[in-house]
Length: 311
Ligand SMILES: Nc1ncnc2c1ncn2[C@@H]1O[C@H](COP(=O)(O)OP(=O)(O)O)[C@@H](O)[C@H]1O
Ligand SMILES: [Mg+2]
Image (cartoon, rainbow, N blue to C red; front, side, top):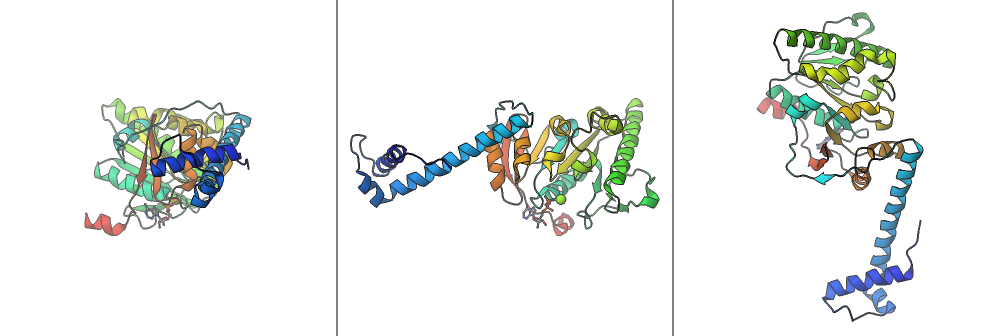
């Protein structure tokens, strides 16, 4: 860690004393007075923590550079007027949710899904971890035996029994069929309003996958579906392992608590460095919502079935 110099400490401590006592710039305290009043140590701690932050941010930038990310200097404005659940924008531009395990992603997805249902948007959820077990929508458990199950809306697909490759193929196949149907519906003048929720997106669309031939169908879905009234919300707890294009294409992003330098380095690609840095300290259920260059801190309520029944 870099230690602040005595001159730096003295200058900040003098400034603190002046602010506290409203005294003139010409009046100065001796070092021992500053130490006695506590402002010396307070200033030293503040400088050390500022410098540690600066050093870590510099480290993050170097890591991003080493990983081959060209960091765009994104300008971020804090905007209180952003909508918490901008479903219309999500239908148009898709949505990406990032955050560590237990940071509150699934809870947000449930709130978004309830809001979508209220607005008569049809949807389906691919649930790899039984997190939607008690959610009030019909469920279909997908196993090796019924991989060909027909596509159905307002349904939770429990894919927890499938291995990663099976789950990936299942989701890819179903989304490809949904897109074909949406195109056919649009052709006869109908405009579907459908939303697909993909949890643990790093398993379905891992890093560098969207350019590969094997992922052609899902790539088609990700890039074209919104033109036909079909959009998606993807979430991941491993930001570093998900395809970068999936995040870039999503016009609405939610950022929950993130740790681990590879994850933070990747987040830095879309966020300014101070917001990225603050991601480490977010509490459960608190996140940033980002739309374009605008961002807002959001404290979400806890989703409960009782609340839904009461409505
Ligand atoms: N907004 C919130 N307010 C209070 N508690 C929350 C909130 N969101 C999540 N939690 C708590 O944290 C736990 C993990 O949340 P979850 O959404 O499942 O996280 P993730 O999907 O990111 O792993 C939940 O079981 C719940 O108890
Ligand atoms: Mg979850």
